Image 1 (spheres, rainbow, N blue to C red):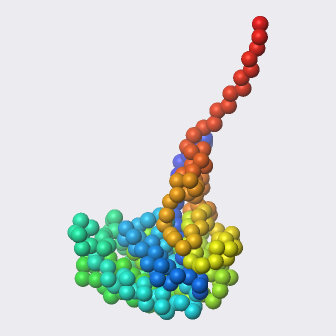
Image 2: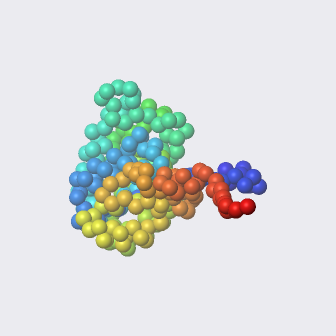
Image 3: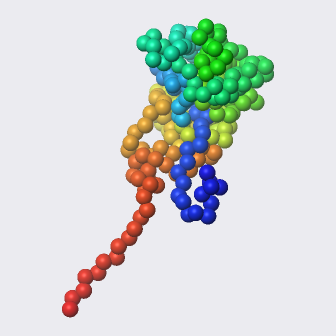
Length: 245
């Protein structure tokens, strides 16, 4: 898109991808963190620009977090999105589902562990089983490349330093979700995360008063807020002077 606009003086505001992380600190409300982050990862079959695609959990909460997350996803009903009992539907196109399956298969071959058994409605096409992976590393594409599908990798971390390093180990920078009871700690961590938006104790949320923007390969420009208005308009100045005769 940048190449297409080159030489035209056309202004660009681009959101091009995301690999949004969640970080659960040791003082977090565990139940709220699991419920919100897993919903953020699986909502709309993972097809959300600011969907959670990787989760880092303090090692003291890691096993409990994974157990609760697996219980939620195991309870999902995969099926026709028009059916009242469906929790999660198909992906928008079979080629998107193929990419998610490829990332999962590559991770499993490299030593990752899958926690969700294949659901009966998984047809090998656009309907695919939502998946939780552990034993993942940043050597795996599922933790680096945009998935944009119903899969999330979960890793334990020892402290804020390790979490910040891993969250920033991405070419994308849209949002990050921090879970802690300490606002000042969230601000300190948030200041060091390379994203356009930082959430504390929530995820995947828009406020029209705040700019929606990203950094790195996520794109440039911004929407919402007065900044979004400025990005969609061209300024024009008037210098008016009244004279007398």
